[in-house]
Amino acid sequence: MKDKVRIAVLVSGGGTNLQALIDAQMAGKIPHGEIVTVISNKEGAFALERARNAGIEAVTILKADCGSKEEFEDVIGDSLEFRKIDLIVLAGFLAVLSEDFVKRFPNRIINIHPSLIPSFCGDGMYGLKVHNAALARGVKVTGATVHYVNEITDGGEIILQKAVDILPGDTPATLQKRVMEEAEWKLLPQATEIVCQKILKEISADEYL
Ligand code: GRF
Image 1 (tube, rainbow, N blue to C red):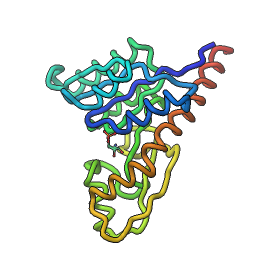
Image 2: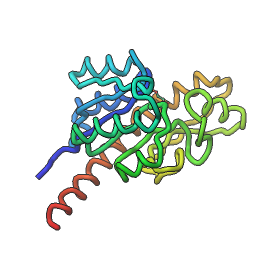
Image 3: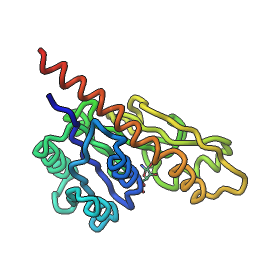
Image 4: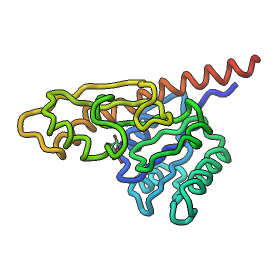
């Protein structure tokens, strides 16, 4: 019987959330999963360095090398299937995945978003834009959300959320840092372990069919 879910982490940037996952894995906090590959759609993303430093395979797949978005997603999907990936974690992956891609991996893709969904999310809402919008609206509390990925941007089932206070004098950058430190880096490993346990149960139930 399978005892660990094979995880792929998809990244585009610095990879602090990837680092949180790697640290959690090393600390034994994701006992039911194993990060087996990290895939970046940006050349030279520092996240790739983090993966290599941890002895994890680091792969770059560029849309420019694939042609269309469809072909790009086919290459990513085929790479994931080739590696027998059970769970895809989007950790700062700055490409919106199509409905076709999502349907290829139903309930097997999760994402972290730096706000309390359904606030400050959806198409075009990423990075500092999210924190900018929260500050502009004057909310007193924001946070982070880990959710399943479906065909609606940031619209899938919510797995975990954590609130973070907005403090007087916050800028988008200070808020981003607090949301990462207090919410994202804790939430993503926790949610990953929860989903790994769920997937293992599904796999073992299927084995009895
Ligand atoms: C994070 O804020 C995450 O919530 C969002 O993109 C950012 C990625 O940061 N989806 P990092 O690359 O993990 O440092």
